[in-house]
Length: 396
Image (cartoon, one colour):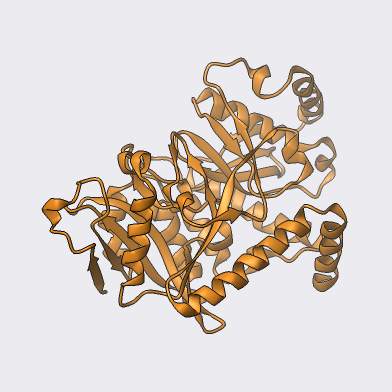
């Protein structure tokens, strides 16, 4: 393990305000950064559940190490050595360019730094420009930071990294905002609820029919076994590649579903409709006491798929989190039609391609242009349909 630091602008530490960035430390292993990282998972900090240490540790152990990525964990401190921001990054060689990206890959819906709440609330452009200047001077700097899928805001603070050059992400993320204490018909209309209850009555005769949030290790293992059996068949039927067959993915999901957050909840929470004979529908995601973010889902191949079990399960999930005082639920990036039945808004997310070397400047132009092109295709129904057909043909 190594840790290197780069001091700031040349001013003596006593000349710097305690809430501004004075220097950065870079850690090349999760173990070395663990104490600082876990110390920033408190109510006085802002982070998404996808940047929790246990989620990232499980991902890196089973996927990141296989992919050969190297941790490049940046901790920005003030003059008194208080951590203000932690960027959970890892680097890999991409076409001869060393690129730093957030841990978690495609399994993280959102990417964001961990930040002290007071720093995030007051940070201005000089703060993030200081961060970039320090990183450009770091002896082990990558060529480029490709920081995608970042939320513009998280809970009550703006994301300071949005003050750097940025562009809208390729896809949006459907979002349902919940108002604590509001009547159930405010989050799901009365007519839609009645339709879903009518469908759910079809399952009433199934022995042991129930909605569950899997709690015990045995319950979690049972639902995951069903998921890993059903999902490949569902994806094959849709002409899509089975991303859950990628090396290490099953092991990552299992570890994260069994691991517990500091508050006692599971790192990934699994919801299901089931009866004594089978698991009918599954939705899983991450939660932090304020927001639930869906990660993956599937449903049965049996005749019990006829009555929209996924929609019924979502109704249970939304009501469950609303009753626990949550203020938001998102259903993952993408514009699937079922998501719009529940989510009328979109989370604003952005990408930044930030060069740290001359080589990185050229790569940033290329990656930025590619992302713009993908976004253009996504917003053209005809082009998006062609792209979907091409993916199906390639994986058929």
